[in-house]
Image (cartoon, helix red, strand yellow):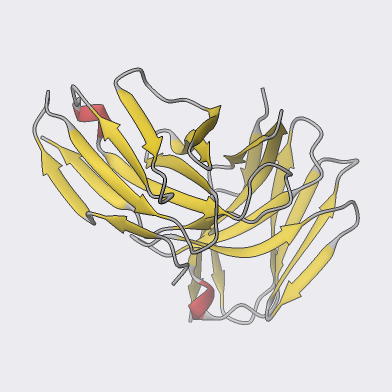
Amino acid sequence: DSGVTQTPKHLITATGQRVTLRCSPRSGDLSVYWYQQSLDQGLQFLIQYYNGEERAKGNILERFSAQQFPDLHSELNLSSLELGDSALYFCASSVAGTSGMDTQYFGPGTRLTVL
Amino acid sequence: ELKVEQNPLFLSMQEGKNYTIYCNYSTTSDRLYWYRQDPGKSLESLFVLLSNGAVKQEGRLMASLDTKARLSTLHITAAVHDLSATYFCAVDRTQGGSEKLVFGKGTKLTVNP
């Protein structure tokens, strides 16, 4: 158990819908990262937040957005869902994530299925 | 753009044998991570390699880093069934005070009795 929690574990929805994935980092960690894992694209970095502010963006679609709240939990919002958005979404956290010295610890993931 | 390549992508081996997984990356980085993922599960951190020549060992797994060759290896000694999993290497891409990991495609290891 990494100490990172994600809810829900599974999500099944229809095309065109909007969903919100939630992540609570390990106690004391200020950085939260979101990754998408799919069979064709592998593991891809989406976005990083540090202490409430966006720090880095990866291959995140415009239909997707995220935020980190004052209590440091984070939410990833996915809208206008398409079949290709079906994937495992991981959240990770690290102590700071600004120095390149921190290990990222991964949550259990949310499996999203778009029908 | 940073690219990370692992090989092999699939590895089937017998218990008791040794083998090495390779991870090459395309641009300079001094930090490399190895993760393990069991089917349907999350990623578990195995090793963090922070400098050239770094070598770390845990049980039957040993990881090393050669930053000049941009190469890391994960060596498996006397494999056992419990090591069956997918192993990912990831390279840190720190830019302007932010971090992201770039992952290889993973090596799916199956250890057969």
